[in-house]
Image 1 (cartoon, helix red, strand yellow):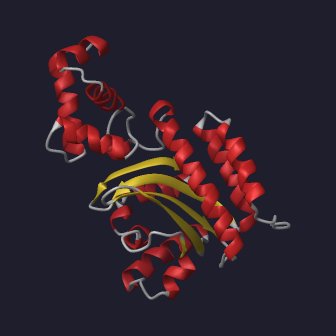
Image 2 (cartoon, one colour):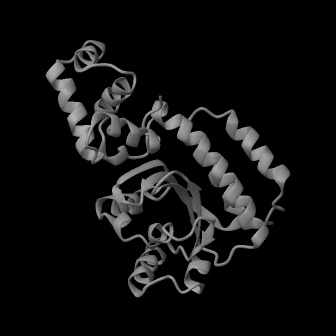
Length: 246
């Protein structure tokens, strides 16, 4: 792995300055992967979720191997992910080792964590929560093959994780998400963006060159997927998860 660089505010500042110049999510992921590698972490994911309803989740970046990515999303593992469980009680960054040590990992949760070890040899992780309103939370989750994270490394990695998360959150609505956010299609997101701008079904149909009935259907589908009771609530949920901007 080579010599571990000394974590510092200067290094964090340099990471932030370089990141601020990047306008492609793939370039952001490359920069972050390079920054975390010396500390024993080799892959990560970043996104937002609603702890009250985990189907309302959004991935901004997924750097996982393709096989694990497909398995995690297709199997609905997010519903039983112990790291997601821990977000209900942990508002500060925490490692897998800390989670096991504090006794909050159930036997079922431990089994799920073991599946990550069996799949990728991942024995350690760092989860960095990003506080949001209500039950919504952002997070960056790092995993690696070396157990244990020194306190100064943890602080540095947490800081650059927060910087990464907020930067890519501002990019994905224009550059694209790592996976369909909350299952929404690109057209549904387009319609929601126009709803947020105060457009009617007729105005949306004209803007997108589709029938008004089709525009209405897209919006109703988005409302159902986000489990909202009104258009206003649908827009509010979409904004809170970083799916659209207003």
